[in-house]
Image (cartoon, rainbow, N blue to C red; front, side, top):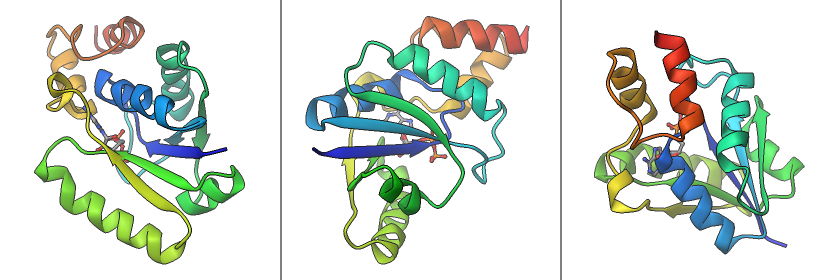
Length: 158
Ligand code: ADP
């Protein structure tokens, strides 16, 4: 049984995140989407809301679970029987940070592998922060997020 944990802030979950989870759900028996309670990024939405939205968005995917986490990622992975950390790579700009993170996690837990997936081309330029900015300024985010996320963003910014 191969379990992968996909950690992130998901503030909010986008079609890019969803694309990565869908691809991973084909590769692994179980994918745990781990929503960081308070990443250094100081999320705009609280963790309960980010978890609830991710659950709605990913409800159709088999073997996918969404849970909040606030401890060290490798400890969370071990507690949940995950031997794989999943991350998404959009562009070269993601590489440096992701490479550093993977190196640190390997140093802390040599048995856990980090696996990178790339999204479909139309999602490569989507980030949660840009989606929030577009929504805040009244732009249409339909192509970037699930309708439930769009609704939540409208409720927040209108
Ligand atoms: P974090 O704060 O951990 O970077 P994010 O929610 O921003 O959390 O991203 C979680 C992971 O998903 C990261 O590996 C990030 O590179 C990846 N990711 C974010 N947006 C996309 C996207 N549009 N396509 C593919 N991967 C993405």
